Length: 173
Ligand SMILES: [Zn+2]
Figure 1 (tube, protein in one colour):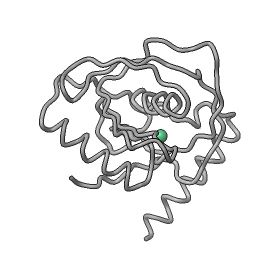
Figure 2 (tube, protein in one colour; figure 1 turned 90 degrees about the horizontal axis):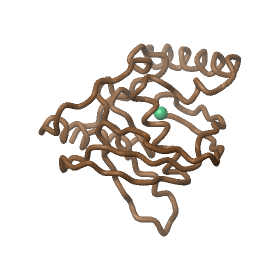
Figure 3 (cartoon, helix red, strand yellow; figure 1 turned 135 degrees about the vertical axis):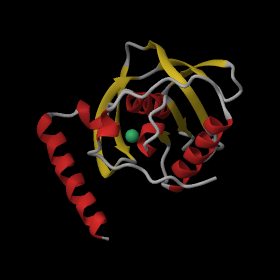
Figure 4 (tube, helix red, strand yellow; figure 1 turned 180 degrees about the vertical axis):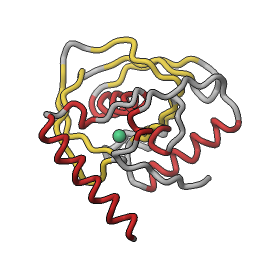
């Protein structure tokens, strides 16, 4: 397994709609392994392939946060939201591509998602709580959408300016 560098906003690849995965190959399995390792290392609770510059519809997540909840690494290929609850919830979201910036985002409180597993089977599950927020945030990445796109323009621009500065500092080393 290999840690992959995570792209930092702004980057055109983070604004691009990713392509569906045709079939589960060894390459896809390797990519999923690398993404899980990269996510846990960050640390984060979700990572979408475009965040490491791979423009395919694949995401990994593990939103098991409570102490009594054991780790649950999940790999979702070609995920689609098939149902959303009318009830909404607000979470303070962050993103590995937008380090150290957090903001409240309102989304459906529960969603049903269908995806292709690494086993080649179709899976479906209803997510709530942090899992629901996480899976929606990651699917957004596959559509070139970031959590800051839900914020007011002023706040979004402020965060983007900070990220431009951060990237400049990192480039200088
Ligand atoms: Zn993100």
